[in-house]
Image: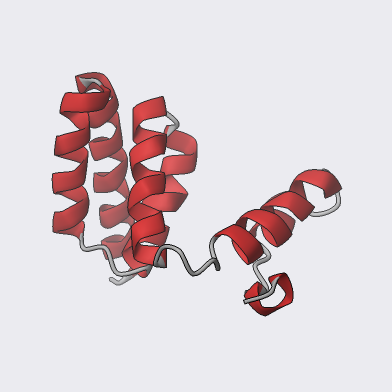
Length: 116
């Protein structure tokens, strides 16, 4: 697979920053999502779990909110995310696990409220 075959057309960086930070937009959309997330070595589901684990361990809850939702859209169930966050709490620190679980609860509740 060549780089040109990996183009997903991701525009999340552009939507977040518009013309404000063109370099960040480019690397987010073209490199991170069009190239890295489209590589064959891991499924998007697995990439999501790895990303959730890293963000949880680092305490990056702002980015975790998006990636928990993205993981759900990539086939990771809410129950799997809850179990992953429990496991991570023991290895990345209880406060990180608690914070990540709070974010997951908000993501799930926000979706439920949007469906009403």
